[in-house]
Length: 397
Image 1 (tube, rainbow, N blue to C red):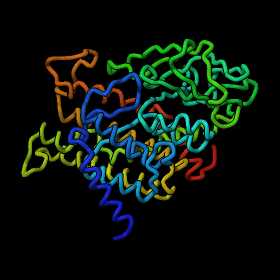
Image 2: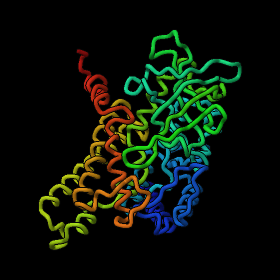
Image 3: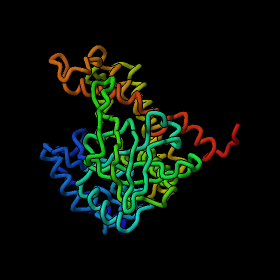
Image 4: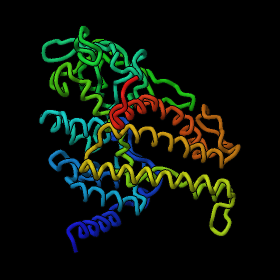
């Protein structure tokens, strides 16, 4: 038996013994926020066991709380989690965005301070990028950070700050040299959210929820020790973080796309009936089959990219994942609602509705939320430009 085969058997046995039934299939997932209490017993047990194993961040070094898995071991773990339907014990901006970025650009002090806390699910992060006048043209941002000895004083506004109301820390792009060209003079800093100089105002969405926020800085403080990378060179760090975000690596760590989602096949059978164990309606059967095939192709492409990058996050090719992944998300929720018919459209602004189940309410809110998926994290139009220039090498103009 090869070493990898032995690792697979050990991993499968460990998962079977340690992953509670309530942590398999759709269900709650911790994001590590100190402001959110985990109430589901199996979710908490699963998190504690995965933290102890180092598998909340399986490919991170052991010295910062990770599992220290090499690329082949990492992929085996993903396969075995997918096989048993185990959802991730932890999924957050910390694990998918700022953590990998600190591994590349952070100082030893920053890594030792922040990464173990992320791995132990003790902290959640939010992203301070977009501003009211700087969305797709992010480099035009105007939030300023002035040098004040051992710290920066920050003034300005960020918008669409996902999860800021539950976050403990923020990673933020700020302008530290207003006289430099717009892609220069930008720095990447870390700062605690709970401080007098930060005000967070929820933005209520069409879905009736408030996942996004406006964030205002009025003499907020970021310590100099929390400057990531070089002063005025934060654009490079910020772009790399977006590649981590767009790669969709979190779905790989979760053991596949189904860890936190309802099965389209099962829901189609429930809504439309069965015919010899198949979806009764041939038109919907064809649509669901096409979605499942497209989704499998997408996951295989992600895996191949991971293998080719030796376990790290790929570069500009992640823009392909952003485009295709968000379109798949939208297709998934479109199909769910179509199959449910009139049961797919409750009043999403109501906190509860006796005429609709919690699952029906939640799915419709998610459908509305993911209409924005092709815009946030860099619009799909911008991603196509990146692919044209940096993947295909096409000329400008």
